[in-house]
Length: 419
Image 1 (cartoon, rainbow, N blue to C red):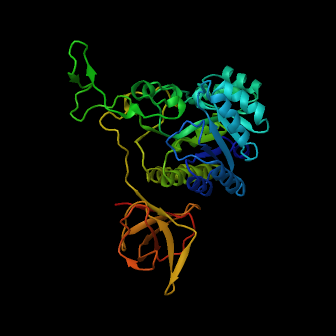
Image 2 (image 1 turned 45 degrees about the horizontal axis):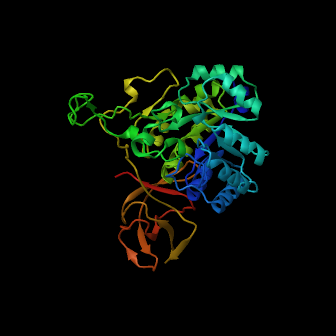
Image 3 (image 1 turned 120 degrees about the vertical axis):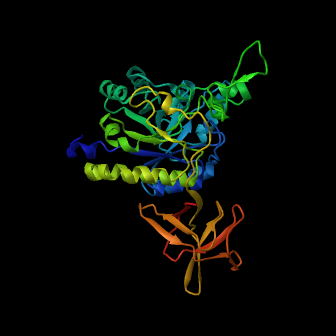
């Protein structure tokens, strides 16, 4: 256990993903110290909403007003035709005020140093960072941080920390989806569909169902294991280290990274808020953290997930880290909406504006998540549509309406429901 005197100096950054401007605001308000986002180009999440330059500018301002940093991903592996476009893109970012670029390609790295010399450069996990020699290499070139390959154990990270300069930062994934290929360097998607994971367009073929075909028996499909539901031989459980905050800190990790730029606002709010509470509780009192482990486990499961594993941190994963019989997520809680800025008063009652994410009805009991960590249980007293007509439910996707929950709420409170 780290002494109380050392704890304050070693408090890690909580780094949270955002795939759109609304989710960035949620990440900031629900506990992020920093948020990583992608622009419309050069980002390894082509299917995320991603940010226009105007949205990025607004997001940076929103975050900086609340002392939260913004990192921009530019972590594709570039081809020749990408380099001039990247030069133009980095020039567009010059007045944006971003705090760091996340890069994996050495050519893109050189362009960033040339065009944005004042911006920190963080080396993406895509660069396969598995040893302290690699960290030293990037440090000498001017990188301030390197993201560990997901395949490293905590012991290997401890050794990294001992052999790299003290000002070299270590960032490590602590929660989210695990890629079945080495640090995300996957060729399956490009080979099978023409959409390259290394260019931000992954189709996630590791989640598909597979069987064996013997070359002399074409069309004869044999299951990999005896299970009439099939087998998903590359379908990893999700990473979750909420129970191992002390070990992660002791290893010398500077930034705890959550995966998920394609995730919903509910996922981001739930995961960010839970890790924020766990980290803060541990630094307030390690015993408080220990006594609340059941609470963290329960909270972290109130969003979609694919069961949990500790990945490579405590040794190589075995067969228990895979899910063989299905590729779907566990979804025990339903995201209903997020409280908007606007509200109406009707006969002395306050109705809060929402955009429907899933249907719910008058009389339903819901949970209201607040960025502070408080959770309120309330019943839906009434609903009105945009014209002020009373309605019993909100059945239409993205429907705009107003709801009275009988309690005082603020913008960005999150509404969820356990069916």
